[in-house]
Amino acid sequence: MRLVLVCISILVMVGLGFLFKRLLRPDSFGVYGSYRADAINEALEVPIRHGTNGSCFKCHPFEAKIHKAGLHKTISCEFCHGTYADHVEGDKKTGTLPVKTGDQITTLCLRCHNTEIKARSEEVIKTVAMPDHLRDQQVKLTHTCNQCHHVHAPLKYINRAKQITGLMEKG
Amino acid sequence: MKINDPSPDMKKRSFLKNVLNGTIAGSLYLVYPMGAGSLETLEQIPGIGDGAYDIHAQEFTFIVDITRCIGCGSCCVADKREYNVPDGNYRTWVERYVKGFSDQIYVDCPNGGLDGYQTPRSDIKEEIRDTFFVPKLCNMCKEAPCVQVCPVGATFITPDGFVLVDEKRCVGCAYCIQACPYSVRFINPVTRVVEKCTWCYHRVRKGLLPACVEVCPTGARKFGSLKDETSEVYKILKGPGVLTVLRKEMGTWPALYYKGARREVV
Image (cartoon, rainbow over all chains, first blue to last red; front, side, top):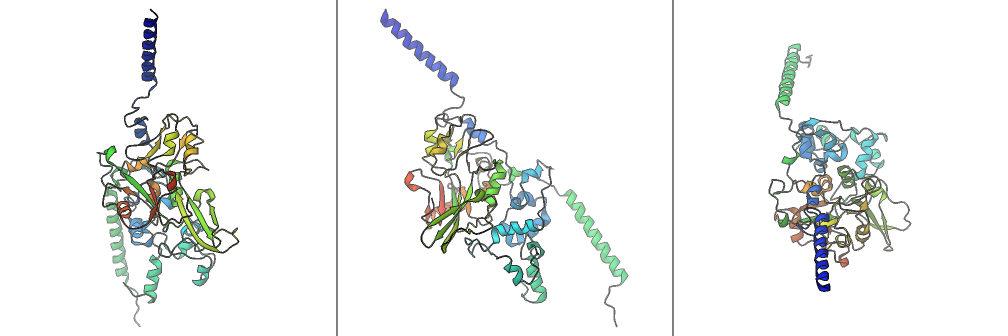
């Protein structure tokens, strides 16, 4: 009689165990391993905020032409201008991205082009020391970078000027 | 003396020409499909994002080329913008290593590199031998300590090799933050659950590069599929260059490789 009681209680315990497991275990648990497989799909729902340069060029063909021809072609539009998601949603323009002006441009340029940060090899990037560069070029020390350099194609005007003045051969 | 000025007639003609050109260009502009918002069609990782994705047959790798990193912080800015990471937390950051002639190493990372590195370090007395930048992000370990320690199974390795966090299961106990040898995890002060770099899993699955790779101006960050033999990362991994992983002795088998890392980098 006692043995039967023990057997029944074990069976009840096992049954309860399975029941609790069934109730508490999340759906899709264990499809790939000891975790919720649905979490992978949830991770995919994070909104994409950065597009590519290609997505910007679609509507800005003028800037695209200059940007692609210049030394800055590897720079992402969105780094300086802001994210695609802040500007476009679906097919509609939803916001205007701020335009950098004056000293903001110089600060932005010097994030990469400052010689004083020694870790920048000549093979990777051309750097300048400010304000020495302004003195060398014999311009006012208050000049911002974009007064001589086109921000999308830094040597666009420089090369053109050299061609006109005959300092550089055409081609 | 001949006056070089064009006749009024010529002026009129060129003016009309310009106006006409302008109008034609303008009308073309209107007809031209302004197809923005078609992010899905932009494919950067070949073969991914066009429907069929076999989660078991993928392998990705990330390579950081320290010799090309200029410490501009574009990646940090992009990362913060992509995920709206709260201030003071960083999913990826760029450290500056300065090495003196006495072999002393000075590491700093003001605001995670978000503002870039505008000024050199002024507090180092000795002569400087070497300066370099080291971008840090999730190492996507194949033997991830964070996954082992999670008591609720909220962090896991997907079949395609990404270590992700299940935000609904995470209880915020921060065991994984202690376990991670690379300190890439933090508790998001808004959601109160653990957050970490995902190598932009949501972008990769749609065939886009991670945001930090997308914005890197010098190509210091490279990402790609190892199943694609034409990809840059495959060629680098197969090639003769020296690649290292961080904290190899921990046995975590990272999928993140560093090119040109000095032995001081940890």
